[in-house]
Image (cartoon, rainbow, N blue to C red; front, side, top):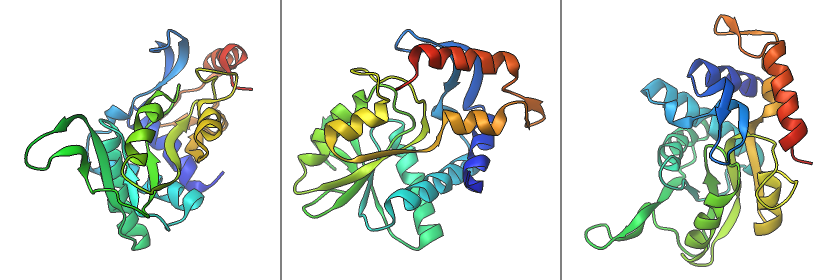
Length: 225
């Protein structure tokens, strides 16, 4: 596992973004882990987060693209932080863009926030986590409506590795199949377990035998095939 991935896993735990215990998800599933990217709130956290995303995007998609699209609302700070990091790490100016939940009819009017998207642009979509792929259903037509645009792929922070909405495949695999572009994560839950199981993080063991057993049972029921 690349060093930045191990660092990112520890960073998620230290930032109180990735937690272990018992959580009820929007889907109704009871999960032994929960991720909330809204817990990244400080300048230093957002600076580091942008760098982790930039490294993962560069690894999977290179730097030959024009726009980083972060769906509202959580995708907005993710996109901004990652564009800044791309400029710092790779000297490449990537434009950020997001959608508005409601179109604005005055001033900077329209459905988009940040950069416009125009014919010939190559776009990477950035999100926190994708469990069902529902946000892509909303995002995809917005981007494609802007013109002759190529979507290179999607980058999320964590691949939960569980069944999507419509099949036994993971949400990321469903997105690849349905929309025809790649979908990747900085790390997967298998990476997380490998990195944290019976190992100290921030002075304590967060995945002990009990949590590991709960994670295994969860994937026995909801794991993607």
